[in-house]
Structure formats: structure tokens, C-alpha cells
Image 1 (cartoon, rainbow, N blue to C red):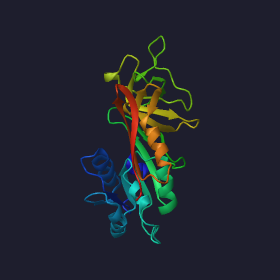
Image 2 (image 1 turned 90 degrees about the vertical axis):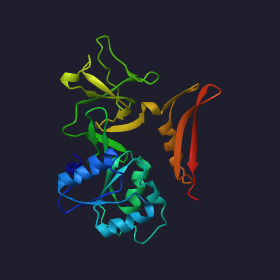
Image 3 (image 1 turned 120 degrees about the vertical axis):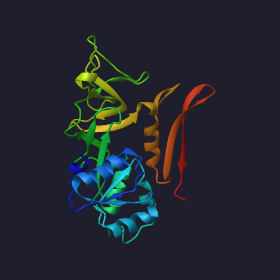
Image 4 (image 1 turned 120 degrees about the horizontal axis):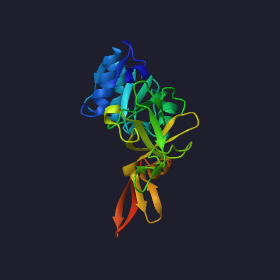
Length: 261
């Protein structure tokens, strides 16, 4: 799926700077290179200062990422060589829309965002790249998907009187479900991931947060990812992290930031 979505051929060189014990390293990066017949360049680690010298040296055309790992690239000092490289696409999962836009505007990278559940047979990709930040649509080989209304306090999908999950409305955050194989079928025929997503009017999925990312504060449920997104919108913030913790027995959201300086 990754090789096909990235249209890898023997003319490509895949640059992998992700540890091979990570699924995106061994299954996606290495697996896609082998499946597409491309060359494979293995870096010792990701380092923003070494990134462009290495991709130029290897003639890398596709770079796989995990999460926010490429964000340090946008904080490198501007250079006349920002677009003097062979990379046509970066691909992976977990990139926020603001980083997507910055990488595309400054370095000219195409971005291919994937989503693959580690617990269910779910494979989604933003193959068109027209919607920065979107997960995209189901790829061939993936289970059938549904976005179901969810009780965010319990993390359970809401069900009708017959026990079937209730489909969420367009743009309504809901729990991502996958049609279960017959031999492992739940009573309703669907199995839940641990992720909350929303579906737009075109059928594209957008990641909202993992169930573990919601904090049930006294003032309501708060998404830690939404807090981080708000912080990343500030030019004074280089890195941001939000989490929930108890203060005097009351759950609150705290955040830490790193400034560019």
C-alpha cells in the first residue's frame, strides 16, 4: 500500500531515518522500498543538520517520517539551497497541518499522510495531497470503516436499540470502527480502534485525538492535541506538548513549550 500510494519505482531512493524497531521504519519505509523495487538509504538517526546533506548525497526522492519528527527542518536557518534537493515526497503518519504547509511552502515537498491502526486492519491514505492534515480515505486491503458517535467520557461507541453503532454526522468527532473479520466478529460486526476522527463531506477522514488524549476536567472534556495545535499556531513556539494531570484531585491540562531561541 505504501509503495503504491507513493508510486515507488526502481528510479526512486527511499531515505529511512526512523529506527527499524518502529513500525513505520521496518514495515513502511523498508517494506515500501522493497515492494516498489526502490533503493534504500538507511540513516543512523534523524538529525536536522544532517538531513539535507544526506538526502542530496544519496539522491533520495522519498523520505518517510513518524509524527512530528520533521518539524526541526522548518527551524533551520533559511538557505538558497532550500529547494536544491531531489526529494519529491515525504510520507508517514502523524503530521499536523501547520507543519505540512510549512514544509511544502519552504522546501517544495509533497506530503503523503497515512493512517494504519496497530490493532485493527485499517489503512487510510491522503493520496491526493489536496487537503493538508487530512488522513484521507480507505486504501484497498483495508477493512470497511465507520465513524461512530462516541461517549467521550467512557470511550465507548454509542449504539441503537439493536446494539449497532450509530454513525456520526459529517464533521462530528466519533470513534473509528473497523468491520471485524467473521472469525473474530463482535456482536455488532464492528471493532473499535482507540482513535477519534471526523469525516468531511467528501468522505475524507481527519484525526482528532486518541482516546487517551482527552482529559476530563471540571469544566469539560479537553483534547490535549487541540491544545498543542493552538500552541503550534504561535511563531514563538518551536515544540509543544500537552498532558493531563491531577492537581488537588482535579484533572487539569498542562503544557510545556520550547522557544526557537
